[in-house]
Image (cartoon, rainbow, N blue to C red; front, side, top):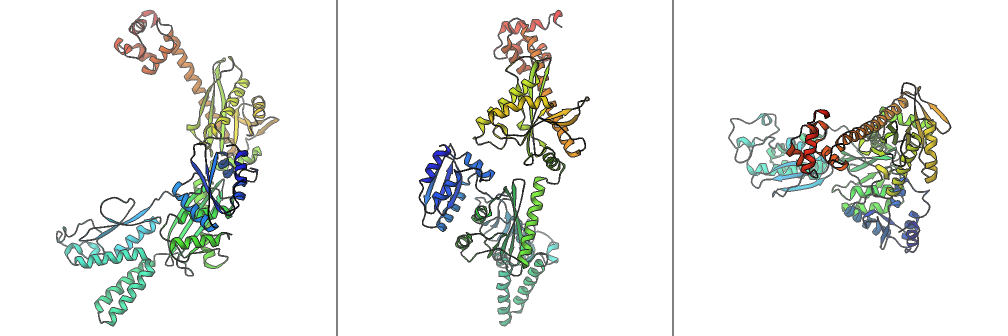
Length: 614
């Protein structure tokens, strides 16, 4: 469907709450959203594109059709939207993914139980708890449980390895192990310790301490002093473990704090998780820039909590939301307890929120390499050329030929200041013969623009011809720029166009535009970047030219042999790679090449053994 057809369909939607499902030309779901009023929300996508963010414009460009589901309330729309996003994982929804994966707690053994933290759930008969997204926290909790409940740290198998060693290991003597290897603890006592460790991991420190404190007091009242002392020692071990934590929250024991930082088209989300008043874990996610908190935050939060099994009592964010009531109801339904959305204005939670924001900014800076030379150069280049935004994706072109022969063009790509070689392209000049760099560049750039028109609505618009670059540089001066600019104007291709000017020693001197030159010698980082781009595109174009020239020279030698045409010469070079290899090949080897007949093979064999052809 065209935009006009989509808008007409959207205007016919009912004025009721629901969920809309955007699809591309292949029928694939690319975006799922909810609406209080379907007609109003969906029609906005197909009106003026000027008010949309870059992400929304890109998504709309790929929409070919949409479906919708009417529901009874805005809350039902939220629940259905979250469910459909979880099932389909659409490309343009905010999908929070990190590189840590999930963690499980594995419980093995029927006779002597043991527990481990693992990354994969296997069909091995063991019992698994999880999955947990807080992998580091679960691994730490398992390690603490081993120490607190004095479980064996070794790889011994029980009861097989009981009394196989002369004495217990060091862990027994420093009270980190109960000495199962020497039979100093019964199977029942060991399994009870494992069960307590599982309770500790699932319920958290605070809940478990409350539980065993009550048991200790009960044992003391019943004059079971030995049992009470063991429980006291366990509480002390837990408290000692907790002392290692340097970050705590006292006003809300269980809360998640969402820090958000945006830069250069990307947003980092940092989720700091506190359980029992203690900092447990942090998760960070890099997504496309969040432009509208009122729309993006609900999607971000519902996406995060739809895939976890550990819900806080409070979720701290930095922006009040109109949909807060619906989100609280939804999360409370998932958690089966009251969950509150909270915007701290001062105090401890405000400090924690600032810490989360700071961590998000630091992570994003590291991911984007904001402080490195490449990005510094790109920002300086943006300023020097007066560009509307940082030129993250740059294409550069250079012509190479020898007196007009083997006329070719090389295109290189620099993404975020670094060469992206998989995007390099090579062109043979087709529209004329001879030497004319102006006409050559005009031909190549016109072909490039036509390829963009073909691929811009395709799936791969992140790189290649389907992506519109932020800047195009030509190896040359004002003449080259003026030769290509009419092509840009003809097709309405609104990309900044400049030339890279060399001095008499073939070194970068300035940047050319239609009306003159911009000197860059005094701009060190810009000079280095442009010089690197110019040298790389020149190298690439010349290498391609030499390859073409060498191939045609070799083919020319072979086609002078009776029975060998251009096609057969190409087959021989594809098989043997070099003229020397063909010359030294045995007759049977020549005949084994598909397409080379016996008479042709004999002709080739004889040619290279004729003294006149040496």
